[in-house]
Each structure stands twice: as structure tokens, then as C-alpha cells.
Length: 84
Image (cartoon, rainbow, N blue to C red; front, top):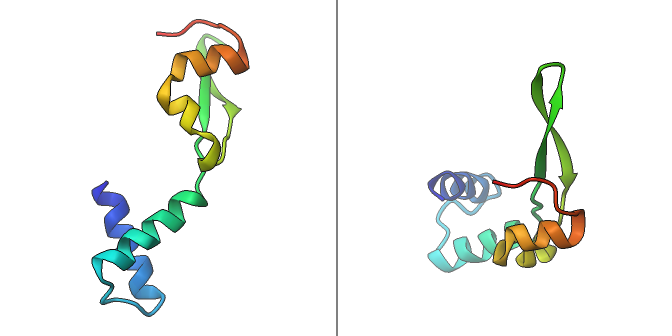
């Protein structure tokens, strides 16, 4: 969270609002989150090692079911697979 806060302050300063109030920072954080996405990667054996492949890239508004029950959401949308 500290990394995001640091980036957000720099972003606001760059766009002419270096003295943003806490409310403006929260509003900016909310706007960034709405425009964000998550990337779900899966391991795949490859030539004696593993590589990661993208399974899904949901937008922020569609990620809530995954956050509530990650394994259940993966099983529902992408099949069982092995999970640890």
C-alpha cells in the first residue's frame, strides 16, 4: 500500500495538485482502482521447468467474487486443476 500511496502522490503532483487533501487522495485512489485489472497466472510445465501463462485478466469491477473465494471462483470459471 505504501508503494501505491507514493505513486499516487507523485501522480497528483504531476497533474498540478501537489497539495492534495486526504479526500482528494482517496478519490484519486478510487478512480485508479476502478480502471485497474488483475492478472491470474497459472504454472505450466515447460522443457523441464515451469512458465506462467495468463489464465484471466478481469477488470476491477469483476474481481470481487474471486477475492471472496479464490479457489471456488477458479473452479467455477476455469475447472478444477491442481491448487495449493
